[in-house]
Length: 222
Picture 1 (cartoon, rainbow, N blue to C red):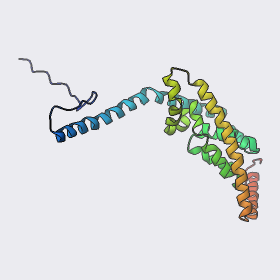
Picture 2 (picture 1 turned 180 degrees about the vertical axis):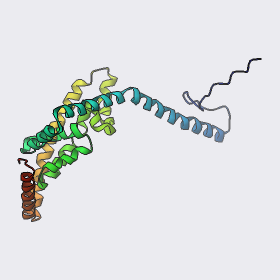
Picture 3 (picture 1 turned 30 degrees about the vertical axis):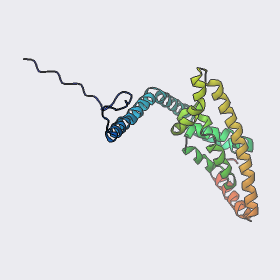
Picture 4 (picture 1 turned 90 degrees about the horizontal axis):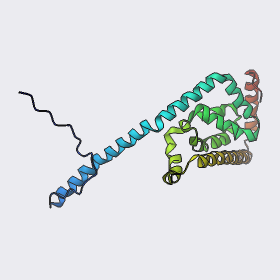
């Protein structure tokens, strides 16, 4: 005689919550409602996780692999020299340098590129780099994957309309570069003003001399 088939394993609730009005007791109804929505919360979280696994996660992995391969192909020394070159002038210090830093090292390691700058420029570089970790996610989501929800929230309206998000992403990316340039220049001026007001000019001149000496010792140009 064949054994009876085991019943399928079913979660407490895998469908939309019902009213739970099988009992007239309000306490029982409240407990049923709480139970249905408790497991419903985790069901929704599981569906969101599945969407990320089959959606954005493969793109992030492929993009990150591509950028690592590109850096390896160009050479880490050449990339480092490009960053040092971009640190020499204010217009590239707050455009090219933070963009390269975020693309190559991602958030938060990108801030370590501040070691190529004298002390007086480091606050402005940080302000510029940290302001670019959201616009960069439009085309390079791997650079700040933990805060990708910011860009997805911006693009949600366009997506619901069925329109392409590429024009919006391009504008978001370009406006981001303009903004980090403005923030970098303004913060650099504010830093210089505060140094002067605090009477720390001589101290920062000493920092500049040490930075120049370290650059000469390392064979780097300022």
